[in-house]
Length: 309
Image: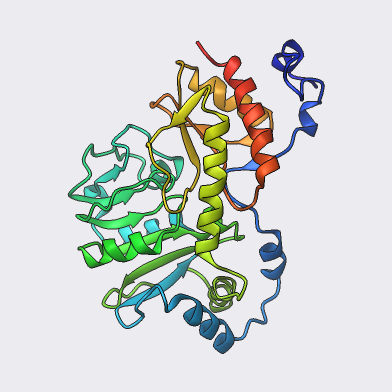
């Protein structure tokens, strides 16, 4: 089936392509090799731990902090805030960097009755917006949603935060996993079996794995994307973060946020609208290249034409 908007737009290079044949881009990177490796459960504990420590000791002081692995960030938050370590769920206050009403489904599913506290300070859970955040300190748990920034992690932990949390699935395309950095005094119980934790250590400790190179790649691709879309929008947060989780773009014209997300997904880009902010969220990660970015630019411009009010 060819979408009606494509049939009507003869300037769109993909206008004659069937919907099923559009390219497919997810917000998170997909690491196919990691999926294959995850099937093998013969990881040696000593090798996995040694390679992980060697790769991260230049960033983390393991005499001060401990790293935990959970099946997902969602599972960690459920575990933490239902334990006697964290605040009772009924008393949780949540804030995000943008101070907007945007609340991801992950958080709303865990805390169905929660609402965002419009403040950057004095919250129990602070959510970074796709890698965009200031170094706010008075927060118990920092959920670096879609991003992975060890400099930000240590700064938070040294200034009063108890937990830094990052999704390995969303940041690096691993088949599962969330990485939690906490003070040594905090004893957390992972929901993963030992071989699963060792697999994640092994992946993070691989000799060809360098999060600085990955972050540089993400920033580079985001700048290409922003340049290509300057006719229709601009960077929502006015800066490129150290590790972009995604590109958040404020459109110049008012648009239908629901329709935009629907059309974008139908054209093969699993992005979304930054609901309530008249902005869009599109992929920007190491799993795509410059050609992919150019394709996405063309698709996004086309979709914008059919969602502007």
